[in-house]
Length: 135
Length: 485
Image 1 (tube, chains in turn yellow, brown):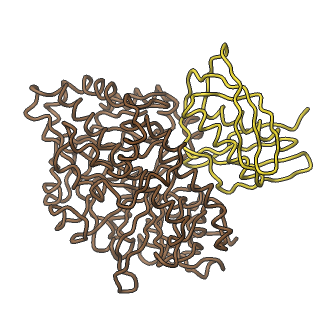
Image 2: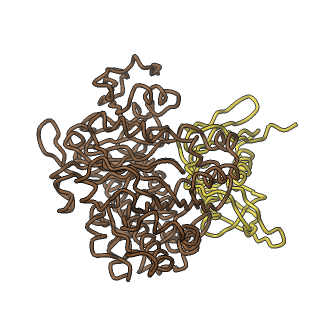
Image 3: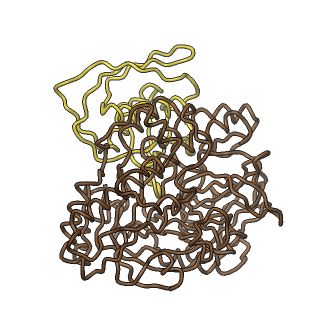
């Protein structure tokens, strides 16, 4: 059984997501799944396209926030749901390849991904963290 | 960190409490809380006070970090937080303003009575719902060009001054006349500009709303009459902000200022408190961009006000004596502004951060419209959905004790998931209907998240600010139509 997952945790005004995975790329993929689950995405399965984007390389927390912020932008501005991620780590930036589907509907508006109390923990099983979204 | 309990506080009065700067070694100023003991004890259940203590470590604070009784934990700063920094030695923090820059409330008053409007409530709710774009992912029917959006950033609410429904008094009855000086669209990212182009004149979702209310009780007849509020008559509240445009600007600068924190050697207990010296290039750039979003939000509420006027005309013209809606006031509750305040007995320009806190200028303060100079600034405090909202006024005490600031609403007590577990949206809709409230909502789960049980009792919040002397009661209003995104 793999050590990968996410769950929504209580936050008075906003929404927080606990995420854990055996390595950092897997954690990003779990974060994406959790994010889309919070947004309540339904997408049109028949059409897909390749989507490439880059995020600045940096510490784990910044990469996670930047990655989720990109996904949020694609939801809000392009109405695209992204999946099947692969990550290419260069010195200054991370190239993210993905498959994109057009969003049919969504339940929730998320304003932003925050750095609030964001710390990446390395554990014996891999990585875990809690990220808070402003809603 | 030392655990914060009631005994951590020095009691100043029944509604004012202070944590001394000696409580934690990195605090630079005290934390001052305006709340009854009951609300203060409730606040200790989440991290809002700890977040205020964290905020008290920021460089250049000129007095205590204040916290209002509707406080709840945010990210970095608590919601309900007020902090003022020195323009030369202090910092500006996007976290002290929030993602929804210039989220705020506008109140419109009418001379329509409940008796007159009752036969048309359902029709009015339907037309409002049709005319005012609201809900998740719902954009505007007009997409702005780059040049138009740049103009919006500079002009704010003035951009709509030639609109058929804009009234002459709208601008001067808006905080800062609906336009902050110093906005510069060149400091806004292309991504934020993209997001801003098709969201102008939209309500959004979450806790944003349009509400048609009845003035049910007057506490200060002179102030109420000055504002045009009369018992038994109809008013309208609009609660929204700068939409994705402001969210993206805050996101961009929280990211950009991470490096400024290291560059200027600022130590922070929480990354979300990220900031830059006001006098630095980074700080100035954020201020210029933030003001663009603030101006966008003033205009957003102006456009929605005009759509609401159009709906009133469609449904009520010829059926009531006058369908016209006059502006009472428009206020921001997520903003950072340069204001002149008394610091150690000396008038000084400082940067006031208000995050989930409303400006509440007392009588005679510069910047208030002539007609409000004698009574003070109207302070609009919406309650939770289906409950009362309050109209207050700022006081001399608010100028002395809270940088002319007051509470902004009821304040959450339940998380969104807790609210959804305890409330079923359809049942809530029925209950509100039984109370005579016509609710139009984009989603039932969204409605459940905003259930009254998820919020504090706004009456208790108001008793605290009135008890502390930072506001006075003018009127209480109750909903008859609620439009939620």
